Image 1 (tube, rainbow, N blue to C red):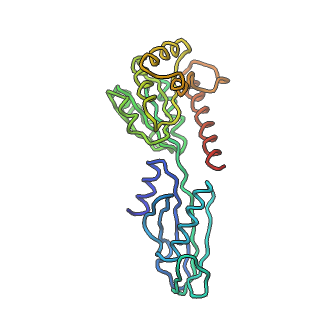
Image 2: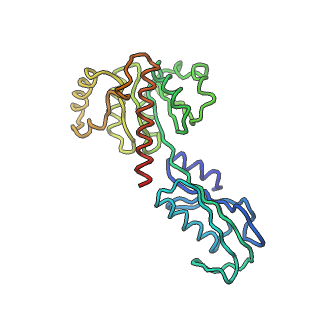
Image 3: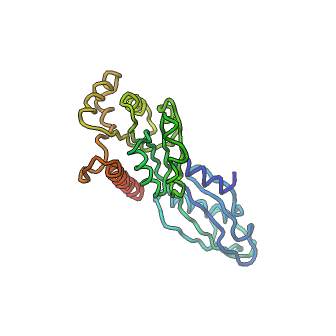
Length: 271
């Protein structure tokens, strides 16, 4: 697999990695300047030339992953018989500079229900670097004309028309934050039930009132979910200090709460 495809794969699977580039070469080297490879905790893709050069870069890249590094680093290596080595001698005679760039895990969000609030929320979230899944059982809510405001999105937008929306839960990547806000309370309840049965999801948020949640909690308990299971569902969603029932206000409140949780996740990874 090429380094470019590997970068896409890691992003899609929400796995951390390091992009390794031969930034400059003086004299002789196994590969020319610009050669790249990708390093993950348990795999590598492509090559910057093998031998001690590549092994040293891979070792440092994996140390960066273990440390949760977020800032690029450079390594300078001499390729001659006098240079200190840990992984075998290379006598090409050149000198290289290696650039190691962390590939952060990008947040993923799945919005179930593209009504007025869902569309406003998509507009806000689309301005951020994340994987954004938009799901609705109604095809007309996902028409390109209706989603035109997302054409210049920073996020990668994935549109799912799903007559049975619960099936999409199995298609989103690990750690995806799920927001349930469909037009149909029965559909919301089915999504909550299915989400609680998925072990790979991140947070589960449900739009609605406390009265709605009391009904849902009783129904979900009858389906076999424990009190601990029910605690996985966060409701109501949105920062409480931002009050208002207008779709745009609700969307901003929900987006702010999500962005705050992303910041906490990054802080945890960096520790």
